[in-house]
Image 1 (cartoon, rainbow, N blue to C red):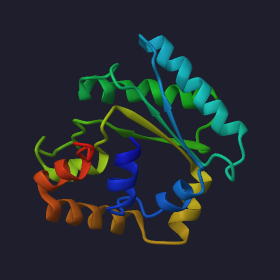
Image 2: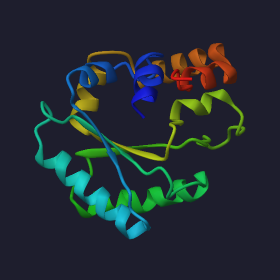
Image 3: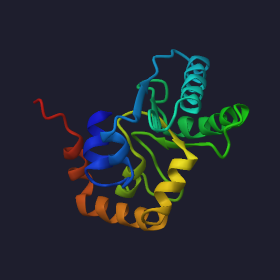
Length: 173
């Protein structure tokens, strides 16, 4: 996950706001080892509360990763409705938003092999828990979300599928 953040998210500038919080150590990568959905929901509860209760200067965003629980993208995608309900149950609508990432992510209406899907592809199924205030500040101080999306698609199309795979390869040989 660290390699993905450093090489793809920051290295390709897919999220122009990521580098600042990454270098300040304000990004938490939490790996869930839950064996079932109930346990993963417990982990989600804990991470939402940690983010709510920790100042942004200490913890700005969290990547909640589960390496094995969601091998099927469409099951993961359907699960996002439950995630939205959990955020609402904690009274965090408008406070924390969730961005999904999955190794097989496919945007609605896109072909599975469209490299543009890589903007939301990560090595493992991941829920990115973002503070709405941080997102609003970042957008207000920089490019529009639409401009970022368009630039990301152009970057990924120029890189191509082989370049994307190479970018994420382990260099340890």
